[in-house]
Image 1 (cartoon, rainbow, N blue to C red):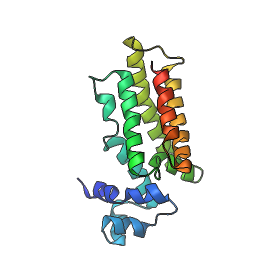
Image 2: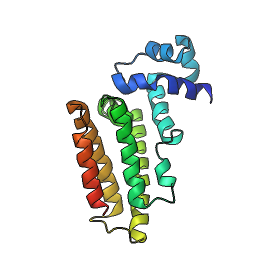
Image 3: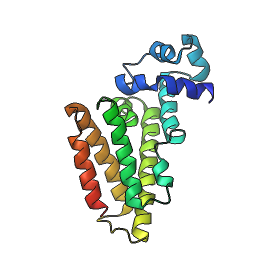
Image 4: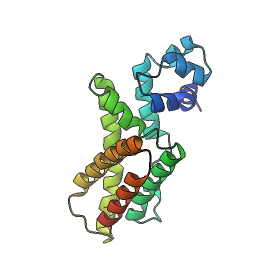
Amino acid sequence: MDKKSEIIKRSYHLMHLYGYNGTSVKKITDAAEIPKGSFYNYFQNKEEYAKCVIEHFRHKESIFYTFEEDELTSAEQISLFFKNQIKYFKKKNYKYGCFVGNLTQEMADVSPVLAKTAEDFHQFVAGQLEQSLIRGVESGEFVLPVDAKKLSNFLINAWQGTLLRMKSNQDDQVLDDYLEILKRILS
C-alpha cells in the first residue's frame, strides 16, 4: 500500500464521522501518525484530501465486489450491495451514514471540486446498479417499472435520503423499509 493510501485508510473515519469542517488537518495527521507538515507532501490541502478519499472508495475499496459476482442473479447482486452497506452502518451504530453523501451535503455548495468528485462517484454507483438492472431485464429475471438508468438514479437518491433518516432516528427501520421496497421492485 502506498503512503497516500495508508494515510487515507488510517484517517478518513474522522471526516466520515465529524464532517469536512469538523476535521482539521492536525486530526488527520494525528490519526495517520505522521507530522502535520508531511500531510502537504501527499495532498495540496484538505479539499484535495477529501477528493482523494472519495476516489479511494471508488477505486480501491471492495464495496462494489457484488456487481462482479457472476454466480449471483442481478437482484441478488443489488440486494447484497445494499445489505453489506447496512451491515456496516449497524456496526457503526447508525452514526456515519455515507461518506460521499455526507460530504456532498456539507460541501457541494462551496466546493465545485468536491461537488464534481461526489457527483462522479454517485454516477459510478448508479452505473453499477444500472448495468446489473439491465442484465436482470435481459435475462428475464424481472421487468422494470421504468428505464434502468432512471431507476438506478432513483435507487441512489432514495438510498441517500434513507441514510439521512437512519442517522436522525438511530435505528434500522428505514433501512428495512428500503430493502423491502427494493425487493418488490426487483421481483
